[in-house]
Length: 253
Image (cartoon, rainbow, N blue to C red; front, side, top):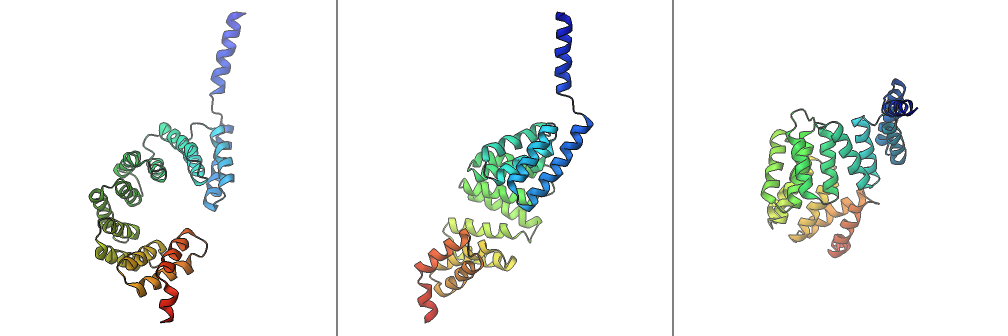
């Protein structure tokens, strides 16, 4: 009787870890639905679908990665980190998961860990978005106050991808942090020319113009940001400077 019970328990354990074709099919369906919801910005639905996917197939690194990104989108950072680490445990060379883990560490101000994760993504020979990973790596170094290393990363991005406009803007941030306001001004102008729709570059341009007492130019660019982002955080920043500069009075002159 004892031998039968032991054999039964062992068989039950093995079957509980078995991945059936039906479970794989259900997991794939849930994963596809999760990706669709994620692309639409339906974050709660994406979380539900990816949770179902990893329940059906807990060995699917892509499903764990999707769950991590869905949690990231809902600002559940601890859960996002856990899911991304699970994806990397299953597939160590999953460069996109490594990149997104580094971005998560940036968001949560864990800059040393961000450098490690993003460096691994940058150095992966088959990663398809090296510019984005290196750009984020530059921001990690900038956030650590290591401006020269940050500058090197952005220069390398632009050497390989000259039209990667966010790196141009961030070079301006480095110049501004070092007190080189005229250089920052030139960089922000270059960034807005590179991407006229980039409101972050236009806001930074307006702010540095304000710091250089170029009031008329600052008012023009800050007003453009306020009008283009009526309900966002950039509008709030622009409005603060517009009031400080008394731009309404300047427009009446």
